[in-house]
Image 1 (tube, each protein chain N blue to C red):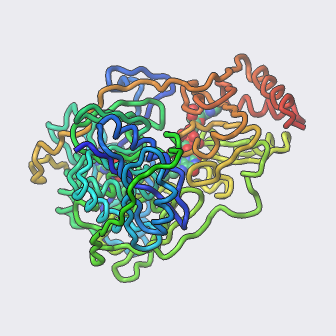
Image 2: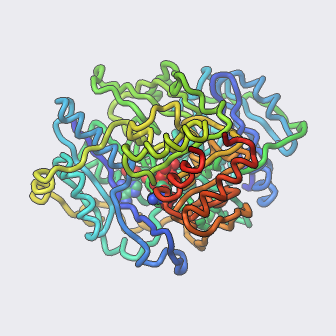
Image 3: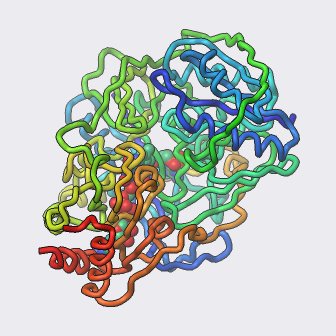
Length: 317
Length: 263
Ligand SMILES: Cc1cc2nc3c(=O)[nH]c(=O)nc-3n(C[C@H](O)[C@H](O)[C@H](O)COP(=O)(O)OP(=O)(O)OC[C@H]3O[C@@H](n4cnc5c(N)ncnc54)[C@H](O)[C@@H]3O)c2cc1C
Ligand SMILES: Nc1ncnc2c1ncn2[C@@H]1O[C@H](COP(=O)(O)O)[C@@H](O)[C@H]1O
């Protein structure tokens, strides 16, 4: 068959943005294959979600009312049953943390290939062409595969679908084997609170692994002091315990939109960029002229941070 | 409890490099233990030190060249290592998730661990999928992107935190046996001591071919075929300031003043 089944993502009562993006990605793929776009809405307030997701390009929405929050066993069982019922060519899921908690299992259960974190997709007959990155974004690759597949899409790569659709909304009667549900979600916790809110800052002096040693953070603090700016960082700095979690910018940290974001010794991995690409002006200081951060920077200095940062600080002292 | 940790030697790329066909030319590549696997090894070794685990075994699919990297895990405290390699894997430029799953599942069946720890992703090809696919294949439970694991197990249940987007963590109980994909920051990986490095040379490192594991050669045929590799086109027109550090710093200082954000 030539249909596309796209799975949506929600958490704690809200649909995540990628649920609207996956409609766009799914519609493009379904246009290529000449099939229909089906959406799966699993758990939570599915009727409310289905109404919101009924946008241009969606042909059918299948709701499965089972529990409030994401459970990977429920998702895996439901999606494999929907696959059996609808026989789509492609199962599309978000490359979110939860997507990665069920998509590989669905693929394996269905004996299908899985291609993750795609940033572009097209299909021609039985052939899928998927674009993805390697080496932390230093290169892009095209990959081909034949036949049915499970594909995960990177968040914020496709525009959100707009308009109002006239998709048929139907409850799908999934047969969930409770004995096979081996994990229980007991709750959620917000982390990264505390005295500083980097998302409020006008200027962020943001430091990454290029700083090498904890002691060297002093030159970053000096610069921030001289500029009256706030210090933030990429993940490894927080992983190392050099700065608290509330300073981390990115997918699993904070989303920031300062007037100026100065990325110092930060390569610009996708999970970092997810947190700062909305900044007004982005300046990158990096010895590597090919670092992915250069793709989104407005201004760049291809030089050693240990030379540039002190020179900059000096100007404001 | 027995723990199996999957570890991969990943390719690292120099700042300047060239692409030949669908590969980065050899002379621009380095090698390192996958960052995420380093945290997984540390977690396993800590569980052993806490008396929860009694054996930590690592497994890798990789050529002989990677043994030095793999021994880093032994130097940090893993008990022994399994390395899977086969003539049929020689020259394969991409092992996709299904291929890895099929090979690794044969090792899981042989070793019969209670807990499998993998990294969230391999730093080079970044599928982020092997741990969960492997769990499904061997009939284990699983959890993806785990950044905390309770070292006291309540019966046969692992209590974990899964790191979701936006600074939210999910508190989850997972029945054993299970595979967990380990996120950076879950612990502080140690440096191997000199003594550890010496001891690692004497630790058992078993090399197995596909036939030894009862895996059919067709397992290495990936469904996914790499057809092109290129440097991404820049989407922005970035202004690059040239000159000495003093010159470029002056340009940046000027910009900050213009934007009215500098004192
Ligand atoms: C599920 C998941 C969630 C994640 N969430 C986040 C997140 O929220 N935030 C985040 O940041 N990351 C996150 N990551 C990690 C991310 O993938 C990268 O590993 C991380 O962002 C890399 O940080 P970095 O740029 O500081 O380090 P690297 O990638 O190591 O880059 C260091 C940079 O410093 C440069 N450099 C080195 N020396 C110098 C020098 N002397 N002068 C100037 N430049 C120098 C190098 O050229 C390089 O570009 C996540 C990963 C996963 C899998
Ligand atoms: N060749 C390999 N040998 C052993 N383990 C691997 C290999 N490739 C991937 N893994 C494991 O699977 C995890 C996720 O890898 P991936 O799904 O390829 O991003 C890694 O962190 C490793 O623990």
